[in-house]
Length: 146
Image 1 (spheres, rainbow, N blue to C red):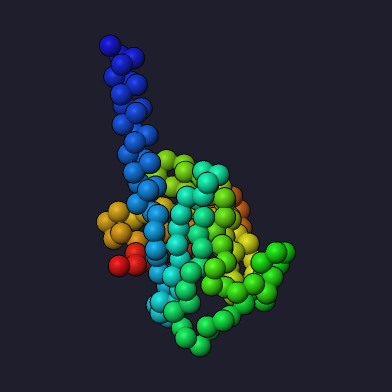
Image 2: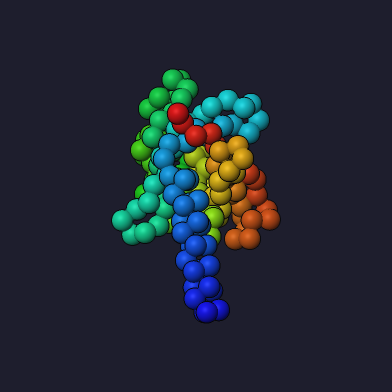
């Protein structure tokens, strides 16, 4: 009987965790930390490889239309920002997405990233950091696009 209860608890926990991750999928608006201005629209999705990704789909400021990632390195160098996958290879880890990276197109730097959903405010918490643990970094909150 104890084994059955343990198995049921494990199943329920897994289903709840997957439901939290699924709520992170969709369109989100990134907001500048300093000004509070909406900057861009991201699409967070699950790839065919089972990992999660975030693609910048639209720049909100019309002055930045056609902007390229001139500070990015590798294959992303000088590619248009709109359509660029900036969050890469995240994995579901309980109620979070972890283990991947995020590129800051303003400086081209790549950071470790942890993504979680604040269920009270329905905002996506993006924590970019220099270390895998997340101590040395900054947090940005994205707003769900209606």
